[in-house]
Image (cartoon, rainbow, N blue to C red; front, side, top):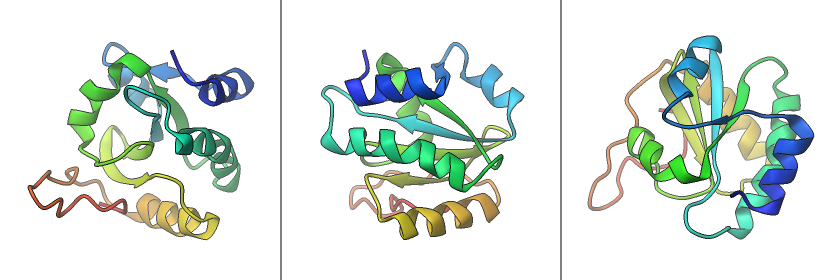
Amino acid sequence: MFSPAVQSMLDLHGYPVVGQDNLDDFLQQHEDVVLFFTDLAKPLPETADVAVILPELAKAFPGRFTVAVVAHDEQHKLHKRYRFRTWPTLVFLRHGQYLGAVSKVQDWSVYLQEIEAILASEPSEPPRITATGAGLASSAG
């Protein structure tokens, strides 16, 4: 079950919900994808903000990526694949390969800069999780 803001975004924009059972098929059908990881156990205040911002980002980058929302009960499983630190997070992929991520709410100009850099980057491995958190910054891979 998604928070009301995320459910409203899904209803209004018709974004697909993906999980382990359909993610790979979805990624094969779309070149550049952003996966919206909303939150884990409880709704986070920033999740509602990102649910409003994400459709605007899609408009700011017309045709540059396809949006999907990670199924609520699949978030933890898929998090292990992309290894980001905080929720909510937007994970960018090209042909299913990791490009980068933007976590939490950012200023509009930061979103535009980060996403442009991410989309211009080459696929790489997601950041490694370390004891100090090194390599977990939300930016282009």
